[in-house]
Image 1: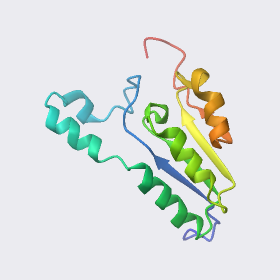
Image 2 (image 1 turned 180 degrees about the vertical axis):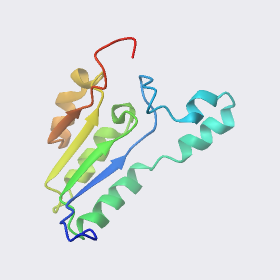
Image 3 (image 1 turned 60 degrees about the vertical axis):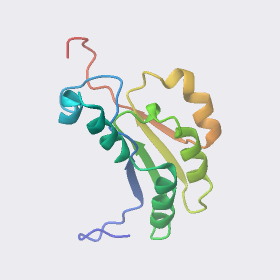
Length: 133
């Protein structure tokens, strides 16, 4: 797949969730601040792609040249079905690399299982080393 400048595009970023376990100011969607009524919270949850939708999107894009999938968020480690998502994507023959962008807070306890599921690469997004920011 090529962009309008003729550059080869072989990767796809898929946002798994808007949920996060920290509250970085630049990333915090407005609805999280105002999510006091349960119905609105459920509507936002329903907007997340399902595991099957994520796998289907990955399959479609693999057929047009995507070789790498990067799973992002919010914080993707908060998805309860993350291991299943990675396992299913890893079965797609054209996908050569599955990456994860995370804040790393839950990484130590999940890393081995993620690797076994088929994760190849991790990017830790460190936005500050200062607790006040």
